[in-house]
Length: 98
Image 1: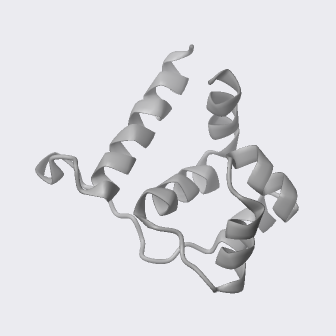
Image 2: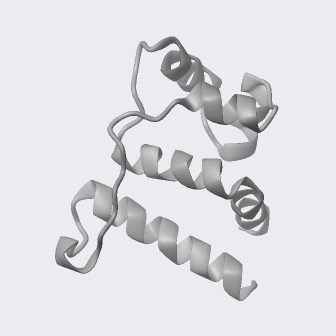
């Protein structure tokens, strides 16, 4: 595993712990927005709903509910979606190696 992949994995774990409220919040300065435009992220990546869901481990029904505004991603998922938005290739590489 590369140092970059290890760093991303640690960062994801820290983001999830922070979003779940189990991290020492005094050590982190993290901003996870209340809303994430999942459709915009998927569109920027030029993926269908099926491709996006399969590639990043989401249920297709959940993805559709987010895009239709019927549900909103929760804290850890919003953090994960932000990482996907900013570094999709790295996330895919880490997931393939897992």
